[in-house]
Image 1 (spheres, rainbow, N blue to C red):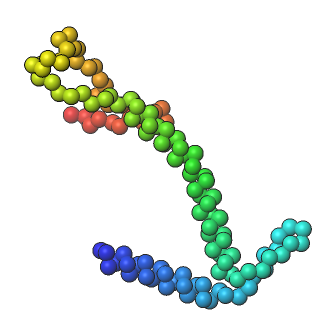
Image 2: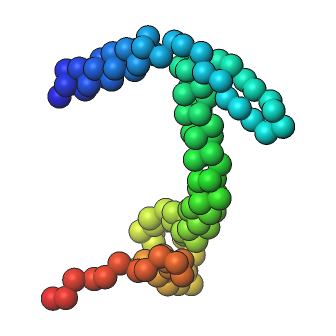
Image 3: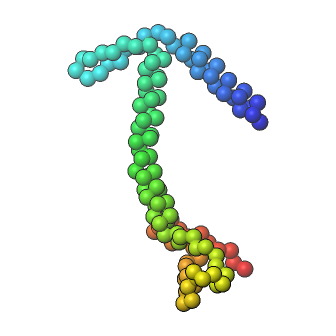
Length: 119
C-alpha cells in the first residue's frame, strides 16, 4: 500500500511538472482601468490555486472555531476524575454521597443525539 501511495505521488508530481513545462509562455491578465499584468502561465495558475486555498481556509475558520468552542465546553462539562477509595482510609469522608453524573454529555442543539438501538 505504501508503494502505491508513493507511485501515486510520483505520477501526480510528473503530471504537474509536465504541465508547468508545457505552459511557460507569457499570459496577459487585463484588470480594470486598463491595468495589465504579464506573467508565465504557471505562476498565474499557482497564484490562483494559492488564493483558492486561502479562501477555503478563511471560509472554514468560523466552523473550526465553533467546533473548538463546543469541544472545550464539553471538556468543561466532564467531571473531574475521582480517586477510588475503599472507605478505610482516614481521609475518606464519612458522609460522602455518590456523584449523580449523567451517563452521556448533552449534545448541542444543532447536533442530534445518537439513536440507541432498539432491543
